[in-house]
Length: 406
Length: 233
Image (cartoon, helix red, strand yellow):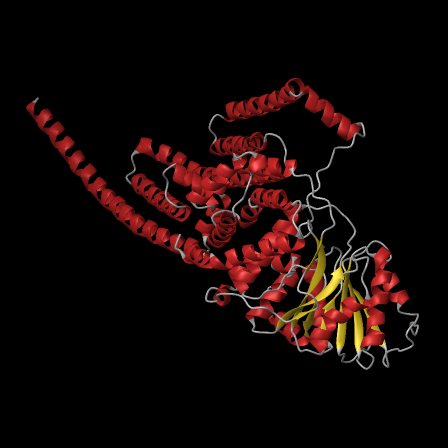
């Protein structure tokens, strides 16, 4: 298919998404037809070897063309391209294809849209593309409405740490929808890291870090609530992917962050955050049991990762009464930083090291749930901000351990 | 009579001189071989040490947990251990070649036997090292997986894996050097069989309830209550 150059490219990575792809495509197309009437656009489907009719559905749905309810339609053809990058899904390979296509088609603005969200609206696509296309941003992260007990790893670890380390207040660097510029795509394409595990599993965080490191403009855009199909949560796998890839990004970009202090607000389109009070607190007893068991069973492993004093404090709180349990913020930050430094010094296999953080995260999670069962959204936001500041305050401690000779 | 004694003594003296005349050059050759061997072994040690530093073997060994065992046994780092081993193996080889040059009849056979054993000893050491690293890595992976999944007795599982791999590595190493092959094989079979039998009995008798639950859950269609983590992202 001959496409030529485009202004906008929307990438849709798929793997067995036939049930939700139709809704996703119609939202993307509606946005392109109504909000980018004069722009040349293409939708690129990169498939990881779906066994269902995902690719056929993508091609077939492009054959019909309707004007839409508003009557306004794009003046140009919206091209649809579908390709299969392999027989197994890989976020990194999918993004590599999208980035390569963006570079080839000289797209000015690109967005990656996941077909798993069941409540995707055209405004999502608009909110990711517009800041790149019209406001010249290079990386746009999404902002979602969160329930109180959703996104706790992001709230307690990923956001505060990424903010303290890389100095940009981007709340969701681990996301399934985001926007980026052609300039950033070209820079990413030049990097020889696409085979790295961290990039293959969570390429979006690496892309954000690349944008920050390259001095490009980053921002975030509010999308609304996100409803994703409940597929169960494998916390170990998620921590291996997210924390593992974040530590890897720290390792590969240390020249940029070691000299950086404080954090900056980034351009934000829409509300900075929105916390809804719905959601039922999850069962807490099991979480504490897993924390306590982990601290006791993994004692030799934790002793090789943590400083003696930190380890002693964690062992002490693990023995406390669950109803009185409290994981102090300072201790949590110190623990995470010591894990990061030990990852850098490779005190043991890096994947094992990241897995050893899981019980400690559960301890922090238990403490959070215990303290916030009845908290208001404002109180929780204040607490979250205090945690971020503690991460920033203790950054010199991380640098000290990071640069220490072993 | 006197003449015979003098002749005998002179014969003995000339034999001794002849023997010394034959032996001294051989001794000299042996010394040369030993000294050259010392230099060659030292050079190989330095080359290997540099190569291992470049390939960051110590970091790999630290990651796999082998370094911890070396420290526990008061041994030097992996790089140092391997380069020193190469030095001693090489030099010992040269010393043995040197000794064989002396031409002492009884020693020849023993030395050739030792020579035949050297590669086997080297392979056995390698097997033990790989076994140690693998056992450590897999037992730690099992421990982490079991702890994070909340299984009962994760340390037992981890130690069982470590023990089985160690036993396998030790029996393979002994088999390689040919030490009491039949005994080692029988001992390994007995230990392994006893371990499995013990575990089966422990699971069946000690954990009747657990066994029943396990079978019901997996064969009887009884659903396990699943614990759901709060959504992390």
